[in-house]
Length: 270
DNA sequence: AAAGACACCTGTCCGC
DNA sequence: TGCGGACAGGTGTCTT
Image (cartoon, rainbow, N blue to C red; front, side):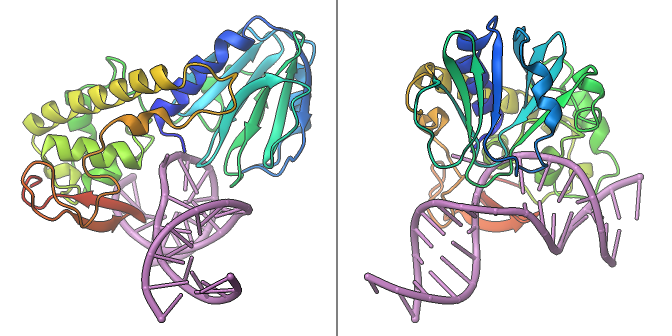
């Protein structure tokens, strides 16, 4: 279920338990993820896990021998449990450490991925074309405005394009556009710089707040598994199609853009 | 070149 | 209660 906030919360949750530990064994219980899990993931066995980084929604587990690239897809979850803990259904990967703990990847839909690269991860095919991180200074209104010129696609699908900016998934695209008062169908190239100046901080705030909230409820990944913390955040439009707008009480409209459900207020969003 | 459709897969929910 | 169909937080790849 991860959007960027949940991936970041996952990173924060697992890293204190596994960073600095030696990897004893990579147990691939089911290699049928989005791409077949390659044999090369075994190259990290015996290595010390140096750190857990994140780029977009990819988690990067770095060792001196190379980096594991892990993606949670739509339904992936991570938890840290003692190696003797019985496997759950859909526990496809178990990375076992020298202290008797293991990192489990549970992913019912198997849209997630586990890959390995010896190179710097940012030159990997999956990562090299990614746009800026939304929470860094590289993502700013001038940049987004420039990228949007001549683009006729709806602003919502534009925001969800990883080459433009990473980490804005369906929930937060809906929420940010509502807060910014922008109709998600509006052509990205026809939106003024002023409106992008309003939108960009809203995207940053929305993601940052979600990380904070997830962090409070999902801090400890050694527990069974956490409820998605960011659902605690009040979602104003996502999942509320047909219900009343929390601002103006008009009925919220639900449409599909790029095959994704899109909810907005025809009064508040122009 | 850009935009949109499709594909991958399992679980859940809704209407009949 | 059972069954078919639609849908779900992502994203690479194919088709227009």
